[in-house]
Amino acid sequence: MPPGGERTARHIRNILDLESRGATVLALSADVADEERMRAVVSEAVARFGDIDVVVHGAGVQDGAYFNFAHLMDRPQCDAHLAAKVTGFHVLQKVLGDRCQDRRITLSSIAAVLGGMTLGPYAAANAALDAYVRVARTRGAGRWVTVDWDTWNIDPDRVAGHSGAVVDFAMTPAEGVDVFERALSAADRAGHLVISTGSLDARIAQWVTGDIHEAGDDDDDRERHPRPELNNAYVEPREGTEATLAAIWSRVLGIDPIGALDNFFELGGHSLLAIELTTRIRKALDASVPVTGLLECPTVRQLAELLDVRDDEEE
Image 1: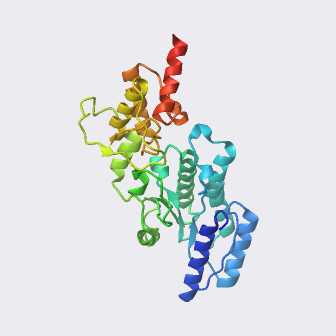
Image 2 (image 1 turned 120 degrees about the vertical axis):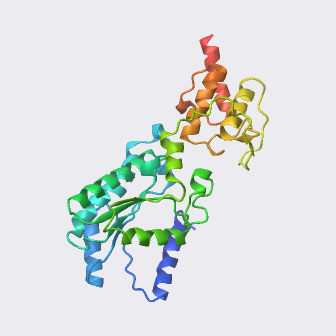
Image 3 (image 1 turned 180 degrees about the vertical axis):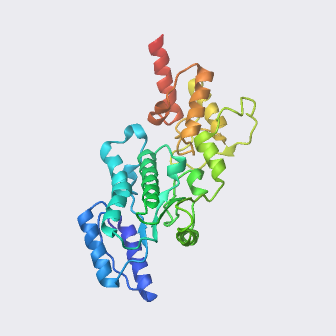
């Protein structure tokens, strides 16, 4: 099957299923940022069905090539997110005109609220979409409701490899549809909804506003979880810097043991834990480690080599 073929096959199966249930489906392809093509799509839809009852702005970039750490992203990667979310919204506003003024909904993202280490441009694009939707609604340019969605677990492998920060909060398709219907029905009362399948306050405290140092240094007796299955075998850290770093990682991640070749992010590490990790490393080894150092050297051995080289250069 060619790249992306499974996703295309799933769409075809969904269309066939709808038609088997008696629905009439008009499947058209267009770049939501292409005003000319989108205007043609609206015209074809109106010609086929007579009018448009509901508008769903669900465009977005999903290819993993467009998600990375901020310092590794280039302008075209960022523009792709903004084109799908923001330019696409403005194009819809132009081509829809006065059609379907009262039932318009977006598929924005909870990343606009919580962010994420590899979600910078994506989060920014969704936050911008939320802002433009609120402005449009206030000005009477369509009764949009923008929805910051939690993760939809549509494909079995959609959340594979992600940390618990994603997997634990993923919605099933049935849950997503139920929330979608509720959000659409609330459009006359709310213009912006945030969908969180767990405590949003707790997640904001963890990812955005929480003080990662408030626990102090006397909580090292907390329970450790066993090392998860990784793509690499366990390698015992060497004495010295590697052993010290492994002990710090174990404390921060709550995992034991930590191998010399284990990747911080594959172990469930994220932006706040990266900050805590580098802070503890500074205290334990009297070494300055920028967060970008962890991004570039995500294993114990790589980071140990970086620190040892810096020590040699300073002597």
